[in-house]
Length: 457
Ligand code: PFF
Image (cartoon, rainbow, N blue to C red; front, side, top):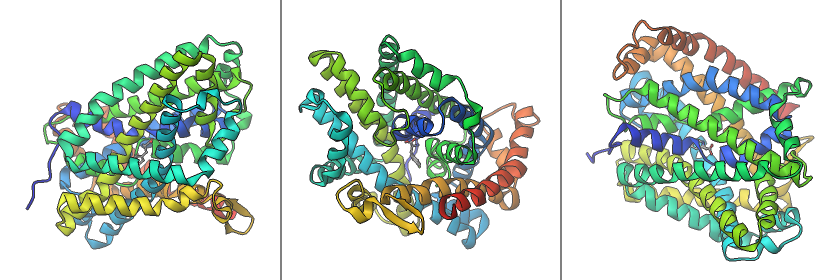
């Protein structure tokens, strides 16, 4: 059997897992979802979900993966039999569907990088219309998203150590410093303080059921949970590594980047008199105005660096999404890495085409009626099913699996390998209670409520 590969060091795992977590979810999606859901009020609920539910579920995934040394299907099947294997398969399917639209948005970021660096984007005077026309024009977008998938595939082809780990170690720190730089610049602009207030002073009257579900879905998406991505990465981790501290660092890094992305965007949005609830175009509409104001040379440099880094953040996530399906094909179907990567990448690219065409190119995909009275774009529909609903559901099933089949004793044993004083600690008690009781109850309830709200209003 071909060797499965593995991370070379603890830092390699942290960089790759943080690379998976930090992506468009933090920089593109978090600010616009927060903007649509009341800013600070959303942020507070988001952080609550991250630490209460996200952290234990992340540990659940990594421990299960490392213990089973297998892809999500193989891991569930190994300890729970074929029926539980279906949960793993469902996760793999969610990953495939998420990658299909994620790759389209990554293509936009790639196009914006080219437009900023070599095109005339910064000479426009209405960035909102530019964005609308840009995403509706599928001819360029087809190439950009194909190109993005091809780059993802080339890296995943190199395997775990060289491709996945090597790229993440360089790209993650670069992103962080650029974010800090743009924040500092944005805060000096007139009107910026209104954005800071919107983002940091909570107005609790804006919290409603929708804010609560959206924040949970966002937390799962952002941490790459609920579809087996971290089961897969955990399976490449050696037994000596301290999962507890590695997962803590990944959660902190991810939350920090989402927080900073909000702190970058809202001051810019308010200083330009735009609406914080602009939606998916927020990053693509708010930022070019700022780059333009910096003047032609500086604007080009900072603007193109920003979109390039957005591409890099997206790339470390597309890599992890593709790797899940690839690991399944290698482990279970005994395919070669080359065959698994090329076929999966191509298939997922094609699955993404309706999402791409649903931004203005084809009317029936732009405004898609799934259930009477609810009309959304095709991409929104895929996001609702495979991200907002499926990921928390995946987390629910994982916690039920650990509670009833794999057992919290095994979960605890796996963490304690590499975490010396874990056994008998407060943390052990806390995590066991969360996984066994709180996660199943809370996530089960949220699943039902989200389903009712999303599809049956
Ligand atoms: N966490 C990524 C982001 O925030 O952009 C998205 C993602 C990657 C979700 C990998 C799920 C996953 F398995």
